[in-house]
Length: 262
Image 1 (cartoon, one colour):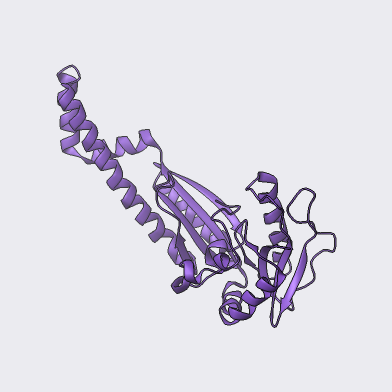
Image 2 (cartoon, rainbow, N blue to C red):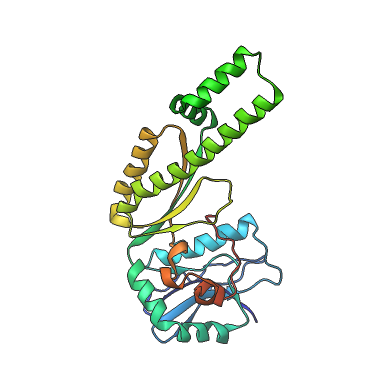
C-alpha cells in the first residue's frame, strides 16, 4: 500500500495525538515509521489524490500538530511513496542530510512574502522620476492624444519602466529583509508577482522580522505585500546546494509541486 508522507522528525519526537486523522475521504489514520534516528509521519495514500482545499488543510494540520512537539521537516503536498519500505529506505539513505536539516531548522519558521505593485501609485512614481516620459505624455495630450504610433511608443516606454521598477523593488525587498533571516529562498519566476520570497526566521525574531516588513510598506507605499506565516519550513527542507531534482528530499518521496502555502 502506498504511503503518503507529511514530514520527517527525529525518532525521539513526542508522540502525536492517537486520534489524528490524515487526508482522504474517509480520512486515513496518521502513523509514524521509524528508521534509526529518524521517523516519517505518514498515512495510507488515497487512490486518487488531488489538491483539494480540504486535503491541503489536513496536510497543514498534521504538520502543525507535529510542529507543536518540536522541529519537523515538512514534505510538500502529495509526497507519496510506493510503500512503507520505500519511506524507510529514503530515511536511511539520506539520514546524514536529514539530521543536519533538523538541527538547522530547530526553532525556526518560514515566512513567505509576495509583492506586487499598486498600478496607479507606481505609474505616478515612474512619471515623476522620468523627464522624457513626462515630456512625451504631455506632448501627446497637447496633440489630442497623439498618433497611434506615438501612443504605442509611450506605452512601450512605460511598460519598460514598470518592468525595470519591478526588478529594482524585488531586489530592495530582499535586501531589506534578508538581515532578519537565517536563509532566503526565491520562488519560481512568472507567478504573477514581482517577488515571491521565503524567509527562514528564528521564532524568537519573528516580531522583528514582521516589523521590518511593515517598515518596507511605510517606505514603499506603491508596493502591495502579502505575508504568509509562520509556516513549516517547506522551502528549506534541503540544503541550498542540494535544491535540485536529484537532491530534493520531497522528490525522493514523489512530491508534486503543490504545497499549502503556494
